[in-house]
Image 1 (cartoon, rainbow, N blue to C red):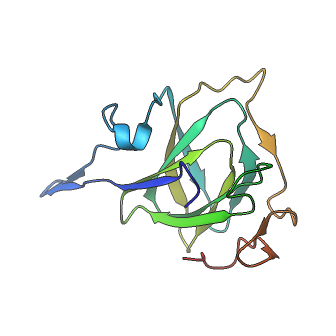
Image 2 (image 1 turned 180 degrees about the horizontal axis):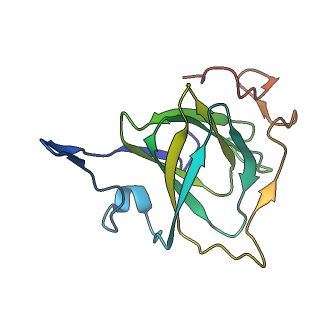
Length: 163
């Protein structure tokens, strides 16, 4: 995986009422490193919806937790001189298996709701959103210049993940 991209399983504590799960803890240093979560957001997306591509240049890191439905998260490195330049990572996450996915903001990244159900995703960030000066660069979801060096083809959101 790209440096800094991490996936951590979350523990469901199941009983006769349902389940409880901790989705983020300050003492999860292996996942968070030096980050501190300062904002949590909720995203609901219809089946097939693509939210891509964007990146953050001021150090924002995103932590995605899918509560229901399924999403494919893609991250792409186009940093000049990077050893992972052209690498594209994908992971599919669902509410059936609770996980948190860490995406460093310097990578272009986005999501697609896969399957026939809407997705409900909580995502936490380590920087507050500034409406007057957003920390976001954007590209079209179907930008043909996002080419995976492993396939030599532009990223296709409709293809299954490489893994």
